[in-house]
Length: 297
Picture 1 (tube, one colour):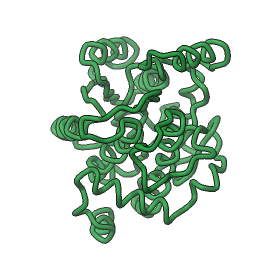
Picture 2 (picture 1 turned 60 degrees about the vertical axis):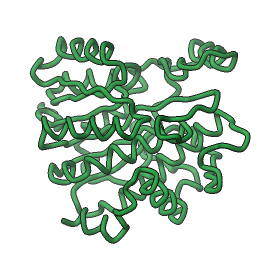
Picture 3 (picture 1 turned 180 degrees about the horizontal axis):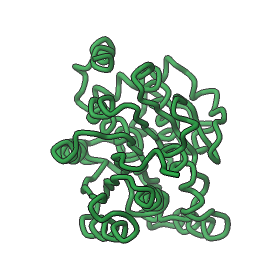
Picture 4 (picture 1 turned 180 degrees about the vertical axis):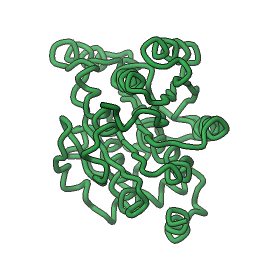
């Protein structure tokens, strides 16, 4: 049986390691036109070559971008649009955990810049292509780490007593706010938006840190984490399953929709984060009314 994904164009960020790489590999096997995004040029090219060995070599491509940099995201999107006029599945997968506060190229706290604004800006810059390709799917990799998190809108940059886990948890809550708000705005367009928790995966996640906390994290991974192949299953499911073609605005765990935290359903907070994100990404001119016009057009 031919999969829905066969012949469809898929863009996957953070696809050189872990669940992103496994997702790309499995979708390439199913006949998708897979475009991976990675930060390191040599590593990204190497992974693309590996994917060509399991799929159609002509159906694998790669782009290089630092997804914590808005200029780099804009360049990546521009290159994608030069090469492709369709995008059926966007998987926002790139993310990281930082034990110490770092600053992005745009002067923003790194966790928020990469894990939330990276998803937000990439998606909005590609949204017209995605809509024109409908039926299409947007998939945001979140985490159960969002449970218990609250966004402090007076300190989204985590300047007051930075805590790496708190910053990460808040970014994963932001992923859900973005997912649910975008799903509401795209109702009736043929584009679905869903989020997922992949599980606690044995990958290179958090290996960018070099301190005692990161060492402990790697030890716990070795003892308790699931494999990247297991962790990628929900991403693959959301990209390919026929039965969820019309499902949108949901949070999936183990390929099943489940409730996310009570805080994640706060519409006012989601709308507030949306407006702040527009401004931080230099998209303030896209007002809510203008966005509705764009998505309906």
